[in-house]
Image 1: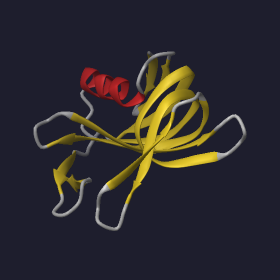
Image 2 (image 1 turned 90 degrees about the horizontal axis):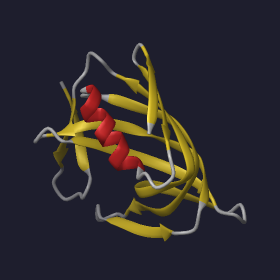
Image 3 (image 1 turned 180 degrees about the vertical axis):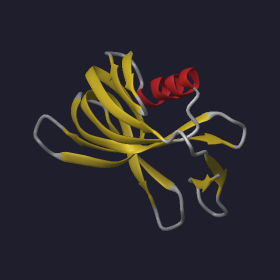
Image 4 (image 1 turned 90 degrees about the vertical axis):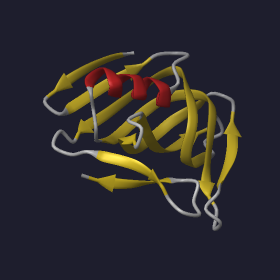
Length: 142
């Protein structure tokens, strides 16, 4: 991973074998980010796990194992109540037949490269807290 910063903007390059959530959490801790918007991401990833939340509030997961084009990535970064970095990311991939796969990203390992832009919300704190009856952690602002 390499990154550069200009004011509250970060531009990150992730390299083969790096898992996106893990590396963004590491960078969040390194820089001391408490709130950020992940505005864009492109590249090529593999071992993708993605899905959606069903009507009962439970995530349904799907595998996209083969390398696929990361067409779009967006989300946010917050902290849990315990202070751990927490990424919430949605993605859109295109497989080699140009079939689109999209949803909540649980895991994605960089195959060739991932290039991601993050805007730090330097005057905000966002905290992820449990929501009754849902697997998702809710977002609170302070």
